[in-house]
Length: 91
Image 1 (cartoon, rainbow, N blue to C red):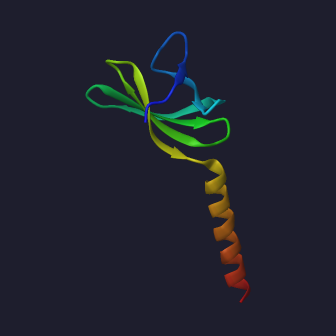
Image 2: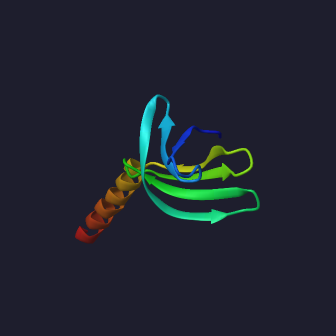
């Protein structure tokens, strides 16, 4: 899915923020990056702790969203599993 990415002024390959609807999402960390034949993949963490894998077509300079993982879901799953383990240990 093509998405809008704001990049740093000195490099089109360094994402600074993206958008979800009208909401601007600031990218706070580049976690990893790797290269394909004409693509650059960038795994980033946003200010809300969500994770994104983005793909930059280095020929057309178009960004695409490859993967998204929402932080609240990750946190809820961890808390749920912790509560379930705690309840089992009391039985």
